[in-house]
Length: 457
Image (tube, rainbow, N blue to C red; front, side, top):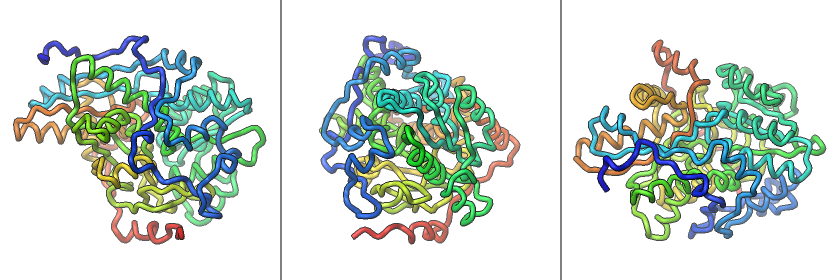
Protein backbone atom coordinates (compact mmCIF):
# COMPACT_ATOMS: atom_id res chain seq x y z
CA UNK A 1 0.00 0.00 0.00
CA UNK A 2 1.30 3.46 -0.85
CA UNK A 3 2.76 5.44 2.02
CA UNK A 4 0.54 8.45 1.37
CA UNK A 5 -2.54 6.36 2.11
CA UNK A 6 -1.46 5.69 5.68
CA UNK A 7 -2.72 8.40 8.08
CA UNK A 8 -0.64 10.06 10.76
CA UNK A 9 -2.76 8.40 13.40
CA UNK A 10 -4.41 5.02 13.03
CA UNK A 11 -7.37 4.65 15.34
CA UNK A 12 -9.51 1.65 16.07
CA UNK A 13 -13.19 2.23 16.67
CA UNK A 14 -14.70 1.56 20.08
CA UNK A 15 -16.23 -1.60 18.65
CA UNK A 16 -12.82 -2.77 17.40
CA UNK A 17 -11.19 -2.45 20.83
CA UNK A 18 -10.09 -5.87 22.17
CA UNK A 19 -12.63 -7.48 24.48
CA UNK A 20 -10.21 -9.95 26.06
CA UNK A 21 -6.63 -9.89 27.35
CA UNK A 22 -4.16 -12.22 25.64
CA UNK A 23 -2.02 -14.56 27.75
CA UNK A 24 1.35 -14.86 25.98
CA UNK A 25 2.34 -17.75 28.24
CA UNK A 26 -0.19 -19.93 26.41
CA UNK A 27 1.96 -19.75 23.25
CA UNK A 28 5.33 -20.28 24.92
CA UNK A 29 6.99 -23.64 24.32
CA UNK A 30 9.05 -23.18 27.48
CA UNK A 31 6.80 -21.80 30.21
CA UNK A 32 8.21 -19.28 32.69
CA UNK A 33 9.50 -20.93 35.84
CA UNK A 34 7.02 -20.89 38.75
CA UNK A 35 7.25 -18.61 41.78
CA UNK A 36 8.86 -20.45 44.69
CA UNK A 37 8.11 -20.31 48.39
CA UNK A 38 11.24 -18.70 49.90
CA UNK A 39 11.12 -21.10 52.85
CA UNK A 40 10.48 -24.44 51.16
CA UNK A 41 11.69 -23.64 47.62
CA UNK A 42 8.56 -25.35 46.32
CA UNK A 43 6.19 -23.77 43.76
CA UNK A 44 3.83 -21.29 45.38
CA UNK A 45 0.25 -22.46 45.76
CA UNK A 46 -2.79 -20.22 45.44
CA UNK A 47 -3.51 -20.43 49.17
CA UNK A 48 0.02 -19.24 49.96
CA UNK A 49 -0.42 -16.18 47.76
CA UNK A 50 -3.89 -15.37 49.13
CA UNK A 51 -2.69 -13.17 52.04
CA UNK A 52 -0.81 -10.95 49.56
CA UNK A 53 -2.84 -10.81 46.32
CA UNK A 54 -6.52 -10.68 45.33
CA UNK A 55 -8.05 -14.09 44.61
CA UNK A 56 -8.91 -13.50 40.95
CA UNK A 57 -5.49 -12.02 40.26
CA UNK A 58 -3.85 -15.13 41.74
CA UNK A 59 -5.76 -17.26 39.22
CA UNK A 60 -4.48 -15.09 36.39
CA UNK A 61 -0.95 -15.17 37.81
CA UNK A 62 -0.75 -18.95 37.91
CA UNK A 63 -2.53 -19.75 34.62
CA UNK A 64 -0.03 -20.62 31.88
CA UNK A 65 -2.51 -22.19 29.49
CA UNK A 66 -5.70 -20.12 29.06
CA UNK A 67 -5.26 -18.13 25.87
CA UNK A 68 -7.73 -15.29 26.44
CA UNK A 69 -9.29 -13.77 29.56
CA UNK A 70 -12.51 -11.79 28.91
CA UNK A 71 -12.27 -8.19 30.11
CA UNK A 72 -15.11 -7.47 32.59
CA UNK A 73 -17.64 -4.91 31.37
CA UNK A 74 -16.84 -2.40 34.14
CA UNK A 75 -13.17 -2.39 33.09
CA UNK A 76 -14.08 -2.10 29.40
CA UNK A 77 -16.27 0.90 30.18
CA UNK A 78 -13.38 2.55 32.02
CA UNK A 79 -11.01 1.75 29.16
CA UNK A 80 -13.34 3.55 26.74
CA UNK A 81 -12.49 6.86 28.44
CA UNK A 82 -9.01 6.73 26.89
CA UNK A 83 -8.87 3.69 24.64
CA UNK A 84 -8.33 2.66 21.94
CA UNK A 85 -5.07 4.65 21.97
CA UNK A 86 -3.56 5.86 18.69
CA UNK A 87 -0.86 4.20 16.65
CA UNK A 88 1.09 7.12 15.17
CA UNK A 89 3.17 7.16 11.99
CA UNK A 90 6.24 9.26 12.84
CA UNK A 91 6.42 11.00 9.47
CA UNK A 92 8.18 14.06 10.92
CA UNK A 93 10.82 11.97 12.67
CA UNK A 94 11.40 9.96 9.48
CA UNK A 95 11.94 13.20 7.55
CA UNK A 96 14.25 14.59 10.24
CA UNK A 97 16.40 11.45 10.12
CA UNK A 98 16.33 11.16 6.34
CA UNK A 99 15.64 7.45 6.69
CA UNK A 100 13.76 5.11 4.35
CA UNK A 101 12.50 3.28 7.46
CA UNK A 102 8.84 3.54 8.38
CA UNK A 103 8.45 4.36 12.07
CA UNK A 104 5.31 3.87 14.14
CA UNK A 105 4.74 4.40 17.85
CA UNK A 106 1.90 3.30 20.09
CA UNK A 107 1.08 6.28 22.32
CA UNK A 108 -0.12 5.39 25.81
CA UNK A 109 0.09 8.86 27.38
CA UNK A 110 -3.39 10.11 26.55
CA UNK A 111 -4.85 9.75 30.07
CA UNK A 112 -4.36 11.72 33.28
CA UNK A 113 -1.90 9.19 34.72
CA UNK A 114 0.25 9.91 31.66
CA UNK A 115 1.20 6.31 30.98
CA UNK A 116 0.22 2.75 30.10
CA UNK A 117 0.02 1.82 33.78
CA UNK A 118 -3.69 2.58 33.99
CA UNK A 119 -4.47 -0.50 31.87
CA UNK A 120 -3.54 -2.83 34.73
CA UNK A 121 -4.32 -0.46 37.62
CA UNK A 122 -8.02 -0.34 36.86
CA UNK A 123 -8.13 -4.14 36.47
CA UNK A 124 -6.42 -4.78 39.80
CA UNK A 125 -8.57 -2.23 41.61
CA UNK A 126 -11.69 -3.83 40.12
CA UNK A 127 -10.79 -7.27 41.45
CA UNK A 128 -9.94 -5.81 44.87
CA UNK A 129 -13.32 -4.11 45.02
CA UNK A 130 -15.09 -7.23 43.80
CA UNK A 131 -13.46 -9.19 46.63
CA UNK A 132 -14.83 -6.70 49.16
CA UNK A 133 -11.47 -5.35 50.33
CA UNK A 134 -11.11 -2.06 52.17
CA UNK A 135 -7.88 -1.00 50.52
CA UNK A 136 -4.63 -1.86 48.78
CA UNK A 137 -0.94 -1.06 49.05
CA UNK A 138 1.59 -0.66 46.29
CA UNK A 139 4.93 0.80 45.30
CA UNK A 140 5.88 3.23 42.58
CA UNK A 141 9.19 4.18 40.97
CA UNK A 142 8.89 7.26 38.77
CA UNK A 143 5.30 7.70 39.91
CA UNK A 144 3.34 6.60 36.84
CA UNK A 145 2.07 3.42 38.50
CA UNK A 146 1.25 5.18 41.76
CA UNK A 147 -0.64 7.87 39.86
CA UNK A 148 -2.55 5.31 37.82
CA UNK A 149 -3.42 3.20 40.82
CA UNK A 150 -4.55 6.16 42.90
CA UNK A 151 -6.91 7.04 40.04
CA UNK A 152 -8.22 3.47 39.87
CA UNK A 153 -8.76 3.31 43.64
CA UNK A 154 -10.58 6.62 43.59
CA UNK A 155 -12.88 5.27 40.86
CA UNK A 156 -13.77 2.20 42.96
CA UNK A 157 -13.62 4.04 46.31
CA UNK A 158 -10.75 1.98 47.76
CA UNK A 159 -8.16 3.18 50.25
CA UNK A 160 -4.74 3.44 48.57
CA UNK A 161 -1.33 3.45 50.27
CA UNK A 162 1.66 4.13 47.99
CA UNK A 163 5.34 3.70 48.84
CA UNK A 164 7.25 5.89 46.40
CA UNK A 165 10.99 5.39 45.77
CA UNK A 166 12.61 8.19 47.77
CA UNK A 167 14.65 9.72 44.94
CA UNK A 168 11.51 10.02 42.78
CA UNK A 169 9.50 11.33 45.74
CA UNK A 170 12.02 14.17 45.93
CA UNK A 171 12.57 14.65 42.19
CA UNK A 172 8.89 14.58 41.25
CA UNK A 173 6.77 16.39 43.88
CA UNK A 174 4.02 17.16 41.40
CA UNK A 175 3.56 13.50 40.55
CA UNK A 176 3.18 12.91 44.27
CA UNK A 177 0.54 15.64 44.48
CA UNK A 178 -1.51 14.07 41.69
CA UNK A 179 -1.63 10.86 43.73
CA UNK A 180 -2.75 12.80 46.79
CA UNK A 181 -5.38 14.59 44.71
CA UNK A 182 -6.88 11.17 43.97
CA UNK A 183 -6.85 10.31 47.68
CA UNK A 184 -3.70 8.21 48.03
CA UNK A 185 -1.43 8.23 51.06
CA UNK A 186 2.13 8.58 49.70
CA UNK A 187 5.24 7.64 51.71
CA UNK A 188 8.87 7.98 50.56
CA UNK A 189 10.65 4.62 50.61
CA UNK A 190 12.57 3.36 52.44
CA UNK A 191 10.78 4.84 55.43
CA UNK A 192 10.70 4.58 59.20
CA UNK A 193 7.04 3.51 59.10
CA UNK A 194 7.77 -0.21 58.53
CA UNK A 195 10.12 -2.73 60.09
CA UNK A 196 11.65 -3.51 56.72
CA UNK A 197 12.14 0.16 55.93
CA UNK A 198 13.96 0.69 59.21
CA UNK A 199 16.25 -2.27 58.49
CA UNK A 200 17.06 -1.08 54.97
CA UNK A 201 17.92 2.38 56.28
CA UNK A 202 20.11 0.86 58.97
CA UNK A 203 21.94 -1.27 56.40
CA UNK A 204 22.11 1.48 53.75
CA UNK A 205 22.18 4.90 55.47
CA UNK A 206 21.22 7.72 53.14
CA UNK A 207 20.00 5.38 50.39
CA UNK A 208 17.84 6.93 47.68
CA UNK A 209 15.76 3.74 47.55
CA UNK A 210 14.71 1.33 44.83
CA UNK A 211 11.59 -0.44 43.63
CA UNK A 212 12.73 -3.49 45.57
CA UNK A 213 12.72 -1.47 48.81
CA UNK A 214 9.30 0.01 48.13
CA UNK A 215 7.82 -3.40 47.29
CA UNK A 216 9.01 -4.80 50.63
CA UNK A 217 7.36 -2.01 52.59
CA UNK A 218 4.10 -2.22 50.66
CA UNK A 219 3.90 -5.99 51.18
CA UNK A 220 4.57 -5.64 54.91
CA UNK A 221 1.72 -3.16 55.33
CA UNK A 222 -0.68 -5.20 53.20
CA UNK A 223 -0.06 -8.47 55.04
CA UNK A 224 -0.30 -6.85 58.48
CA UNK A 225 -3.46 -4.79 57.84
CA UNK A 226 -6.85 -6.60 57.81
CA UNK A 227 -8.89 -6.04 54.65
CA UNK A 228 -5.88 -5.05 52.52
CA UNK A 229 -3.96 -6.70 49.70
CA UNK A 230 -0.87 -5.76 47.73
CA UNK A 231 -0.79 -4.92 44.01
CA UNK A 232 2.19 -4.59 41.67
CA UNK A 233 2.56 -2.44 38.56
CA UNK A 234 5.02 -4.59 36.61
CA UNK A 235 6.98 -7.87 36.56
CA UNK A 236 4.10 -10.23 37.40
CA UNK A 237 2.31 -12.43 34.86
CA UNK A 238 -1.05 -10.83 35.66
CA UNK A 239 0.30 -7.35 34.81
CA UNK A 240 1.67 -8.43 31.44
CA UNK A 241 -1.71 -10.05 30.79
CA UNK A 242 -3.61 -6.79 31.35
CA UNK A 243 -1.08 -4.80 29.31
CA UNK A 244 -1.57 -7.10 26.32
CA UNK A 245 -4.31 -4.71 25.22
CA UNK A 246 -1.48 -2.44 23.99
CA UNK A 247 -0.10 -5.05 21.61
CA UNK A 248 -3.51 -6.30 20.52
CA UNK A 249 -4.56 -2.79 19.53
CA UNK A 250 -1.22 -2.17 17.83
CA UNK A 251 -1.46 -5.31 15.74
CA UNK A 252 -5.11 -4.62 14.82
CA UNK A 253 -4.19 -1.08 13.68
CA UNK A 254 -1.31 -2.36 11.55
CA UNK A 255 -3.50 -5.08 10.08
CA UNK A 256 -5.91 -2.41 8.79
CA UNK A 257 -3.20 -1.39 6.33
CA UNK A 258 -1.54 -4.76 5.79
CA UNK A 259 1.60 -3.71 7.70
CA UNK A 260 3.99 -6.24 9.22
CA UNK A 261 6.69 -4.94 11.58
CA UNK A 262 10.35 -5.82 11.04
CA UNK A 263 11.42 -4.54 14.47
CA UNK A 264 9.35 -4.09 17.66
CA UNK A 265 11.05 -2.07 20.40
CA UNK A 266 10.09 -1.35 24.00
CA UNK A 267 11.73 0.01 27.12
CA UNK A 268 12.26 -2.60 29.81
CA UNK A 269 12.37 -2.18 33.58
CA UNK A 270 10.17 -4.84 35.12
CA UNK A 271 8.49 -5.72 31.83
CA UNK A 272 4.91 -4.43 31.86
CA UNK A 273 5.06 -2.15 28.82
CA UNK A 274 7.33 -4.37 26.75
CA UNK A 275 5.43 -7.54 27.62
CA UNK A 276 2.12 -5.94 26.70
CA UNK A 277 3.36 -4.44 23.44
CA UNK A 278 5.02 -7.57 22.09
CA UNK A 279 2.40 -10.15 23.17
CA UNK A 280 0.64 -10.84 19.83
CA UNK A 281 3.82 -10.29 17.79
CA UNK A 282 5.77 -12.75 19.92
CA UNK A 283 2.91 -15.26 19.60
CA UNK A 284 3.11 -15.02 15.83
CA UNK A 285 6.90 -15.24 15.93
CA UNK A 286 6.75 -18.39 18.07
CA UNK A 287 4.16 -19.91 15.71
CA UNK A 288 6.23 -19.07 12.62
CA UNK A 289 3.75 -16.52 11.25
CA UNK A 290 5.95 -13.45 11.68
CA UNK A 291 9.66 -12.88 11.16
CA UNK A 292 10.62 -9.83 13.21
CA UNK A 293 13.19 -8.68 15.75
CA UNK A 294 11.93 -7.87 19.23
CA UNK A 295 14.21 -5.59 21.23
CA UNK A 296 14.16 -4.77 24.94
CA UNK A 297 15.90 -1.52 25.90
CA UNK A 298 17.08 -0.98 29.46
CA UNK A 299 19.16 1.71 31.20
CA UNK A 300 22.90 1.12 31.35
CA UNK A 301 22.70 1.95 35.05
CA UNK A 302 20.36 -0.99 35.76
CA UNK A 303 21.13 -3.66 33.12
CA UNK A 304 19.33 -6.77 34.36
CA UNK A 305 18.98 -8.50 30.96
CA UNK A 306 22.29 -7.48 29.43
CA UNK A 307 24.51 -7.97 32.49
CA UNK A 308 22.42 -9.87 35.01
CA UNK A 309 22.21 -13.56 35.82
CA UNK A 310 19.30 -15.87 34.98
CA UNK A 311 18.49 -17.31 38.37
CA UNK A 312 15.94 -17.47 41.15
CA UNK A 313 15.94 -14.30 43.24
CA UNK A 314 13.76 -12.37 45.64
CA UNK A 315 11.44 -9.88 43.98
CA UNK A 316 12.12 -7.35 46.73
CA UNK A 317 15.01 -5.93 48.73
CA UNK A 318 13.53 -6.97 52.08
CA UNK A 319 13.35 -10.62 50.95
CA UNK A 320 9.75 -11.16 52.02
CA UNK A 321 8.27 -11.89 48.57
CA UNK A 322 8.35 -15.18 46.66
CA UNK A 323 11.37 -16.18 44.60
CA UNK A 324 11.11 -15.63 40.85
CA UNK A 325 13.39 -17.00 38.16
CA UNK A 326 14.47 -14.00 36.18
CA UNK A 327 17.41 -12.07 34.83
CA UNK A 328 18.52 -10.24 37.95
CA UNK A 329 21.26 -8.06 39.41
CA UNK A 330 20.46 -9.32 42.91
CA UNK A 331 17.65 -8.11 45.16
CA UNK A 332 20.15 -6.10 47.19
CA UNK A 333 21.27 -4.08 44.19
CA UNK A 334 20.43 -0.39 44.66
CA UNK A 335 20.43 1.29 41.23
CA UNK A 336 21.95 4.71 40.63
CA UNK A 337 19.37 7.53 40.95
CA UNK A 338 18.94 8.04 37.21
CA UNK A 339 15.90 9.82 35.85
CA UNK A 340 14.09 6.80 34.41
CA UNK A 341 12.59 5.82 37.75
CA UNK A 342 10.23 3.26 36.24
CA UNK A 343 13.22 1.24 35.00
CA UNK A 344 15.09 1.10 38.33
CA UNK A 345 14.32 -2.51 39.18
CA UNK A 346 16.87 -5.25 39.83
CA UNK A 347 15.09 -7.98 37.88
CA UNK A 348 13.01 -8.67 34.79
CA UNK A 349 9.63 -10.35 34.32
CA UNK A 350 9.87 -14.16 34.35
CA UNK A 351 7.99 -14.26 31.03
CA UNK A 352 10.41 -11.91 29.31
CA UNK A 353 13.40 -13.54 30.97
CA UNK A 354 12.38 -16.93 29.57
CA UNK A 355 11.82 -15.50 26.09
CA UNK A 356 15.19 -13.78 26.19
CA UNK A 357 16.92 -16.93 27.40
CA UNK A 358 15.27 -18.85 24.56
CA UNK A 359 16.74 -16.40 22.04
CA UNK A 360 13.35 -15.07 20.93
CA UNK A 361 14.11 -11.54 22.05
CA UNK A 362 17.12 -9.22 22.00
CA UNK A 363 18.24 -6.77 24.68
CA UNK A 364 20.41 -3.68 24.72
CA UNK A 365 21.26 -1.03 27.29
CA UNK A 366 21.73 2.70 26.73
CA UNK A 367 23.19 5.53 28.88
CA UNK A 368 20.83 8.29 29.97
CA UNK A 369 22.49 11.26 28.26
CA UNK A 370 21.99 9.61 24.86
CA UNK A 371 18.44 8.76 25.94
CA UNK A 372 17.65 12.42 26.62
CA UNK A 373 19.28 13.47 23.35
CA UNK A 374 16.79 11.20 21.60
CA UNK A 375 13.92 12.47 23.76
CA UNK A 376 14.67 16.07 22.83
CA UNK A 377 14.99 15.28 19.13
CA UNK A 378 11.69 13.40 19.21
CA UNK A 379 9.89 16.16 21.12
CA UNK A 380 11.03 18.83 18.67
CA UNK A 381 9.67 17.07 15.60
CA UNK A 382 6.79 14.90 16.86
CA UNK A 383 5.29 17.37 19.36
CA UNK A 384 5.15 15.03 22.38
CA UNK A 385 7.38 15.37 25.44
CA UNK A 386 8.24 11.72 26.14
CA UNK A 387 8.80 10.12 29.52
CA UNK A 388 12.43 9.16 30.24
CA UNK A 389 11.42 5.50 30.30
CA UNK A 390 9.83 5.67 26.84
CA UNK A 391 12.83 7.58 25.54
CA UNK A 392 14.97 4.46 25.87
CA UNK A 393 12.84 2.91 23.12
CA UNK A 394 13.02 6.15 21.11
CA UNK A 395 16.82 6.06 21.32
CA UNK A 396 17.04 2.59 19.81
CA UNK A 397 14.28 3.26 17.26
CA UNK A 398 16.29 6.25 16.00
CA UNK A 399 19.48 4.18 15.93
CA UNK A 400 17.77 1.44 13.91
CA UNK A 401 16.29 4.01 11.51
CA UNK A 402 19.75 5.50 10.95
CA UNK A 403 21.08 2.03 10.16
CA UNK A 404 18.37 1.82 7.48
CA UNK A 405 19.60 5.15 6.15
CA UNK A 406 23.06 3.65 5.73
CA UNK A 407 21.86 0.45 4.07
CA UNK A 408 18.87 1.81 2.17
CA UNK A 409 16.55 -0.79 3.72
CA UNK A 410 12.89 0.19 4.13
CA UNK A 411 12.24 -1.57 7.41
CA UNK A 412 9.11 -1.02 9.48
CA UNK A 413 9.90 -0.09 13.07
CA UNK A 414 7.28 -0.11 15.84
CA UNK A 415 8.00 1.12 19.35
CA UNK A 416 6.05 1.77 22.51
CA UNK A 417 5.71 5.36 23.74
CA UNK A 418 4.62 4.48 27.25
CA UNK A 419 3.83 7.96 28.46
CA UNK A 420 4.56 11.66 28.74
CA UNK A 421 7.41 13.45 30.52
CA UNK A 422 5.65 16.51 31.91
CA UNK A 423 6.45 15.45 35.49
CA UNK A 424 10.08 14.83 34.54
CA UNK A 425 11.12 18.41 33.87
CA UNK A 426 13.79 18.35 36.60
CA UNK A 427 15.51 15.68 34.52
CA UNK A 428 15.14 17.69 31.34
CA UNK A 429 16.50 20.73 33.18
CA UNK A 430 19.62 18.84 34.26
CA UNK A 431 20.09 17.61 30.72
CA UNK A 432 19.81 21.11 29.25
CA UNK A 433 22.10 22.58 31.92
CA UNK A 434 24.77 19.98 31.20
CA UNK A 435 24.49 18.53 34.70
CA UNK A 436 23.26 15.07 33.71
CA UNK A 437 25.80 12.30 34.11
CA UNK A 438 25.93 8.71 32.94
CA UNK A 439 26.52 6.03 35.51
CA UNK A 440 27.39 2.50 34.47
CA UNK A 441 28.08 0.04 37.30
CA UNK A 442 31.36 -1.86 37.19
CA UNK A 443 31.55 -5.65 37.10
CA UNK A 444 32.81 -5.52 40.69
CA UNK A 445 29.77 -3.51 41.81
CA UNK A 446 27.38 -5.93 40.13
CA UNK A 447 29.22 -8.90 41.61
CA UNK A 448 28.25 -7.78 45.12
CA UNK A 449 24.56 -8.31 44.38
CA UNK A 450 25.00 -11.39 42.22
CA UNK A 451 27.12 -13.15 44.85
CA UNK A 452 24.19 -12.94 47.29
CA UNK A 453 21.63 -14.69 45.11
CA UNK A 454 19.75 -17.40 47.02
CA UNK A 455 20.95 -20.96 46.55
CA UNK A 456 18.21 -23.21 45.17
CA UNK A 457 18.71 -26.97 45.38
